Image (cartoon, rainbow, N blue to C red; front, side):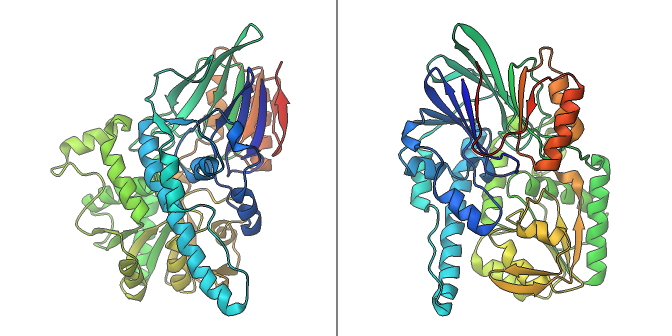
Length: 466
């Protein structure tokens, strides 16, 4: 077999791995690259392979860095099936259309400015029409139900516990009269988080492609996270400022809303308005309600005991849909919490909220997820005093905070433990979805537990496994 690494190689975005098995080509993920704007546009605007040559695609989960260029795949001539869980398919339906809508909206906004300044106009990578056409290729299957995306290759999904519907991908195949198993972790979640079940273990693998986002790093204890959130809300309220939380619309937003609901019920935070300013997050929350088969026992118990049976709403919480409602938030002088996408501050409504509040020392910008290199979120978190938003420079005077406990990724111990718990360990391991230092630290620890051949591939590397 042959593996080509076309994304998430020494970076955490753009997951895209191409397998060739018995002459058939199977694509694992087809994600957006997020980072330096010019590089991102170049990579996302054209695929590194002939889309017509791909026989099938398997999607680990619906986050845009794993699914975001699927419309480019079908637009470029791919005519096969895209396999994923039913929850991932439902999420992709709203997320891909939302991604296209944001691209078209941002293009219109920037082109108005570019026309005034004599700069060239830009085009969205794909349109909403492209995204809708892409959805016709999706095939949904549940965890533990084996299927054949290409002849002679059997795939089974296991629960990765990362976001709703996320899957570990187990690929069993025979080549040259030798049976093998390749395991692709997708993104591994964490144990004991609210809402979703814990990641499942896998008993064996011959080849392992593992994510390494938090290699060498360890999360804050989960039990401390809710208290940290409560304190930041109280502090911002006392300063009469606005708390802005750039948050991924899938998973992170629902976890924060759930925790705030518990804090409100326990009277640990003031009676403060909370706005989820994201049509996508609003739609995603409705999809969460449709998939209780993905829930863990904690939230099922809460739903069964709550009079309204609602884990994602209370009287002072508002889901904001229209652009006019979103603009009104920035015109208002009230103290409030605004949760808005995107999580890395690269697009969407959060940019407008940052533009209005990043220079206000009373405001707090709270990061609750990973910030990839060269993204606006990473620059703010790293302490840049001046940042560009929509091409204009802004002084950073707001309070910049981070809570690590909300990460949906497993930390170093979780990643090492996934491989360590295998009864038959892989003979070939590849670390993806990790920046250099994280990948190297994970590599060293995997070697310490007995994995002999652990490689950190570069983008474009082709590995032949005899």
